[in-house]
Amino acid sequence: MTQIAAPHRFIQLYDFRFRIWPIVLAALLMHGILTGGREIARWLYKSGPAAWDGHVSIFLLLAIAFQALFGLAGIAVAKRLVPEMDAHLRWPPERTYVGLALVTGLAMGLIMLIADYWPALLSQTPPTTQYSTTPLDSGGFLLGMLTTGLAEETIFRGLLVGLLVVLVPGRLRIGAVDLPVAAYIVALLFALAHWQSFVVDPLHQALAQQTYAFVWGLTYVWLMERSRSLLVPIVAHGMGNFTEVAIVIMLAAAWA
Image (cartoon, rainbow, N blue to C red):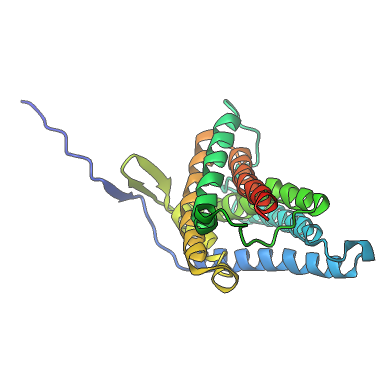
Protein backbone atom coordinates (compact mmCIF):
# COMPACT_ATOMS: atom_id res chain seq x y z
CA MET A 1 0.00 0.00 0.00
CA THR A 2 1.45 3.33 -1.05
CA GLN A 3 1.68 5.93 1.72
CA ILE A 4 1.48 9.61 0.86
CA ALA A 5 3.53 11.85 3.12
CA ALA A 6 1.61 14.68 4.74
CA PRO A 7 2.54 18.02 3.19
CA HIS A 8 4.67 20.31 5.31
CA ARG A 9 2.97 23.47 6.43
CA PHE A 10 4.71 26.71 5.48
CA ILE A 11 4.45 27.93 9.09
CA GLN A 12 4.79 25.42 11.90
CA LEU A 13 5.11 25.95 15.66
CA TYR A 14 6.19 22.93 17.66
CA ASP A 15 7.33 21.93 21.17
CA PHE A 16 6.18 25.34 22.37
CA ARG A 17 5.40 26.19 25.99
CA PHE A 18 4.29 29.75 26.63
CA ARG A 19 5.32 31.55 29.82
CA ILE A 20 4.96 35.28 30.33
CA TRP A 21 7.28 35.81 33.30
CA PRO A 22 10.52 34.86 31.48
CA ILE A 23 9.64 37.35 28.73
CA VAL A 24 9.09 40.09 31.30
CA LEU A 25 12.36 39.08 32.98
CA ALA A 26 14.19 39.30 29.65
CA ALA A 27 12.79 42.78 29.00
CA LEU A 28 13.85 43.94 32.45
CA LEU A 29 17.32 42.45 32.05
CA MET A 30 17.70 44.13 28.68
CA HIS A 31 16.66 47.51 30.03
CA GLY A 32 18.75 47.21 33.19
CA ILE A 33 21.96 46.15 31.45
CA LEU A 34 21.71 48.64 28.57
CA THR A 35 20.75 51.54 30.84
CA GLY A 36 23.18 50.63 33.61
CA GLY A 37 26.14 50.35 31.27
CA ARG A 38 25.19 53.58 29.50
CA GLU A 39 24.75 55.60 32.71
CA ILE A 40 28.03 54.45 34.23
CA ALA A 41 29.75 55.33 30.95
CA ARG A 42 28.06 58.74 30.97
CA TRP A 43 29.26 59.43 34.52
CA LEU A 44 32.82 58.41 33.70
CA TYR A 45 32.77 60.45 30.50
CA LYS A 46 31.58 63.58 32.30
CA SER A 47 34.05 63.00 35.14
CA GLY A 48 36.96 62.29 32.82
CA PRO A 49 39.79 64.57 31.79
CA ALA A 50 39.09 67.82 29.96
CA ALA A 51 40.64 66.32 26.82
CA TRP A 52 37.55 64.09 26.52
CA ASP A 53 35.20 67.08 26.15
CA GLY A 54 33.37 67.01 22.84
CA HIS A 55 34.64 63.54 21.88
CA VAL A 56 31.40 61.57 22.05
CA SER A 57 33.09 58.51 20.63
CA ILE A 58 34.79 58.04 24.03
CA PHE A 59 31.40 57.80 25.70
CA LEU A 60 30.30 55.29 23.04
CA LEU A 61 33.33 53.06 23.66
CA LEU A 62 32.84 53.24 27.43
CA ALA A 63 29.17 52.30 27.08
CA ILE A 64 30.02 49.30 24.89
CA ALA A 65 32.65 48.11 27.38
CA PHE A 66 30.36 48.30 30.41
CA GLN A 67 27.37 46.78 28.62
CA ALA A 68 29.55 43.88 27.49
CA LEU A 69 30.84 43.36 31.03
CA PHE A 70 27.32 43.45 32.48
CA GLY A 71 26.15 41.03 29.79
CA LEU A 72 28.92 38.58 30.68
CA ALA A 73 28.11 38.95 34.38
CA GLY A 74 24.45 38.26 33.59
CA ILE A 75 25.42 35.11 31.72
CA ALA A 76 27.56 33.93 34.65
CA VAL A 77 24.65 34.39 37.08
CA ALA A 78 22.08 32.90 34.70
CA LYS A 79 24.24 29.80 34.17
CA ARG A 80 24.25 29.20 37.92
CA LEU A 81 20.46 29.48 38.08
CA VAL A 82 19.69 27.71 34.78
CA PRO A 83 22.58 25.27 34.22
CA GLU A 84 21.17 23.92 30.93
CA MET A 85 21.36 27.37 29.34
CA ASP A 86 23.80 27.67 26.43
CA ALA A 87 25.16 31.19 25.83
CA HIS A 88 27.39 29.93 22.98
CA LEU A 89 30.48 31.52 24.57
CA ARG A 90 32.89 29.31 22.68
CA TRP A 91 35.07 29.32 19.60
CA PRO A 92 33.20 27.68 16.69
CA PRO A 93 33.82 23.95 17.23
CA GLU A 94 34.01 23.13 13.52
CA ARG A 95 33.95 25.75 10.73
CA THR A 96 34.41 29.31 11.99
CA TYR A 97 31.92 30.84 9.50
CA VAL A 98 33.80 34.14 9.89
CA GLY A 99 33.78 34.61 6.12
CA LEU A 100 30.01 34.18 6.06
CA ALA A 101 29.74 36.64 8.95
CA LEU A 102 31.78 39.26 7.12
CA VAL A 103 29.78 38.93 3.90
CA THR A 104 26.50 38.98 5.83
CA GLY A 105 27.60 42.03 7.79
CA LEU A 106 28.66 43.85 4.63
CA ALA A 107 25.25 43.19 3.07
CA MET A 108 23.53 44.36 6.25
CA GLY A 109 25.55 47.58 6.26
CA LEU A 110 24.64 48.40 2.67
CA ILE A 111 20.95 47.66 3.29
CA MET A 112 20.97 49.88 6.39
CA LEU A 113 22.74 52.65 4.48
CA ILE A 114 20.07 52.69 1.77
CA ALA A 115 17.16 52.32 4.22
CA ASP A 116 18.43 55.09 6.52
CA TYR A 117 19.83 57.62 4.05
CA TRP A 118 18.09 57.09 0.71
CA PRO A 119 16.92 60.75 0.45
CA ALA A 120 20.50 62.02 0.84
CA LEU A 121 21.86 59.35 -1.49
CA LEU A 122 19.37 60.28 -4.22
CA SER A 123 20.06 64.00 -3.90
CA GLN A 124 23.80 63.53 -3.24
CA THR A 125 23.65 65.80 -0.22
CA PRO A 126 25.61 65.23 3.02
CA PRO A 127 23.77 62.71 5.23
CA THR A 128 22.41 64.20 8.45
CA THR A 129 24.41 62.36 11.09
CA GLN A 130 25.92 62.75 14.55
CA TYR A 131 29.18 61.16 13.44
CA SER A 132 32.13 63.54 13.34
CA THR A 133 34.33 63.66 10.25
CA THR A 134 37.46 64.62 12.23
CA PRO A 135 40.09 61.84 12.18
CA LEU A 136 40.09 61.22 15.95
CA ASP A 137 36.34 60.99 16.43
CA SER A 138 35.80 59.16 13.15
CA GLY A 139 38.27 56.53 14.28
CA GLY A 140 36.56 56.27 17.66
CA PHE A 141 33.12 55.87 16.12
CA LEU A 142 34.36 53.25 13.67
CA LEU A 143 36.04 51.31 16.47
CA GLY A 144 32.79 51.54 18.41
CA MET A 145 30.84 50.17 15.45
CA LEU A 146 33.25 47.25 15.05
CA THR A 147 32.89 46.34 18.73
CA THR A 148 29.16 46.94 19.17
CA GLY A 149 28.51 43.25 18.76
CA LEU A 150 30.63 42.48 21.82
CA ALA A 151 27.98 44.19 23.94
CA GLU A 152 24.73 43.68 22.05
CA GLU A 153 25.29 40.07 20.98
CA THR A 154 26.45 39.12 24.48
CA ILE A 155 23.28 40.64 25.93
CA PHE A 156 20.65 39.78 23.32
CA ARG A 157 21.79 36.48 21.84
CA GLY A 158 24.10 35.11 24.53
CA LEU A 159 22.10 36.01 27.64
CA LEU A 160 18.50 36.60 26.56
CA VAL A 161 18.15 34.01 23.79
CA GLY A 162 20.16 31.55 25.89
CA LEU A 163 17.75 31.97 28.80
CA LEU A 164 14.51 31.99 26.83
CA VAL A 165 15.39 28.90 24.81
CA VAL A 166 15.16 27.05 28.12
CA LEU A 167 12.39 29.02 29.85
CA VAL A 168 10.11 29.49 26.81
CA PRO A 169 10.88 26.37 24.77
CA GLY A 170 9.68 25.77 21.25
CA ARG A 171 10.62 26.42 17.65
CA LEU A 172 8.91 28.26 14.83
CA ARG A 173 9.54 27.22 11.24
CA ILE A 174 8.63 29.67 8.48
CA GLY A 175 9.44 28.13 5.12
CA ALA A 176 13.02 26.93 5.28
CA VAL A 177 13.88 29.05 8.33
CA ASP A 178 13.61 27.10 11.58
CA LEU A 179 14.50 29.08 14.72
CA PRO A 180 13.69 28.92 18.43
CA VAL A 181 10.70 30.95 19.57
CA ALA A 182 13.19 32.75 21.81
CA ALA A 183 14.84 34.18 18.69
CA TYR A 184 11.60 35.95 17.67
CA ILE A 185 10.94 37.25 21.18
CA VAL A 186 14.44 38.67 21.56
CA ALA A 187 14.43 40.06 17.99
CA LEU A 188 11.33 42.03 18.97
CA LEU A 189 13.04 43.26 22.14
CA PHE A 190 16.11 44.13 20.05
CA ALA A 191 13.96 46.25 17.74
CA LEU A 192 12.19 47.94 20.66
CA ALA A 193 15.57 48.75 22.20
CA HIS A 194 16.00 51.20 19.29
CA TRP A 195 12.82 53.13 20.17
CA GLN A 196 14.72 56.40 20.62
CA SER A 197 15.15 56.58 16.86
CA PHE A 198 11.54 57.81 16.75
CA VAL A 199 12.63 60.80 18.86
CA VAL A 200 15.88 61.78 17.15
CA ASP A 201 15.61 60.48 13.56
CA PRO A 202 13.27 61.12 10.61
CA LEU A 203 10.22 58.85 10.56
CA HIS A 204 11.36 56.82 7.54
CA GLN A 205 14.68 56.12 9.28
CA ALA A 206 13.04 55.16 12.58
CA LEU A 207 10.64 52.76 10.84
CA ALA A 208 13.50 51.25 8.84
CA GLN A 209 15.56 50.71 11.99
CA GLN A 210 12.70 48.90 13.72
CA THR A 211 12.24 46.64 10.71
CA TYR A 212 15.82 45.68 10.01
CA ALA A 213 16.67 45.39 13.72
CA PHE A 214 14.02 42.65 13.99
CA VAL A 215 15.25 40.86 10.86
CA TRP A 216 18.90 41.17 11.88
CA GLY A 217 18.01 39.79 15.32
CA LEU A 218 16.72 36.61 13.66
CA THR A 219 19.73 36.46 11.35
CA TYR A 220 22.15 36.66 14.28
CA VAL A 221 20.46 33.67 15.95
CA TRP A 222 20.61 31.74 12.66
CA LEU A 223 24.35 32.45 12.46
CA MET A 224 24.81 31.51 16.12
CA GLU A 225 23.02 28.18 15.71
CA ARG A 226 24.80 27.39 12.45
CA SER A 227 28.26 28.01 13.94
CA ARG A 228 27.36 27.03 17.52
CA SER A 229 29.27 30.12 18.64
CA LEU A 230 28.52 33.72 19.61
CA LEU A 231 31.62 34.81 17.68
CA VAL A 232 29.88 34.73 14.30
CA PRO A 233 26.97 37.07 15.14
CA ILE A 234 29.44 39.37 16.93
CA VAL A 235 31.51 39.64 13.73
CA ALA A 236 28.45 40.11 11.50
CA HIS A 237 26.99 42.75 13.82
CA GLY A 238 30.22 44.73 13.98
CA MET A 239 30.82 44.47 10.24
CA GLY A 240 27.31 45.71 9.46
CA ASN A 241 27.52 48.75 11.70
CA PHE A 242 31.07 49.54 10.57
CA THR A 243 30.11 49.38 6.89
CA GLU A 244 27.19 51.77 7.21
CA VAL A 245 28.95 54.32 9.43
CA ALA A 246 32.19 54.26 7.41
CA ILE A 247 30.30 55.05 4.20
CA VAL A 248 28.21 57.75 5.93
CA ILE A 249 31.34 59.46 7.27
CA MET A 250 33.01 59.33 3.85
CA LEU A 251 29.93 60.70 2.08
CA ALA A 252 29.50 63.46 4.68
CA ALA A 253 33.09 64.54 4.07
CA ALA A 254 32.92 64.19 0.29
CA TRP A 255 29.57 65.99 -0.18
CA ALA A 256 30.09 68.70 2.44
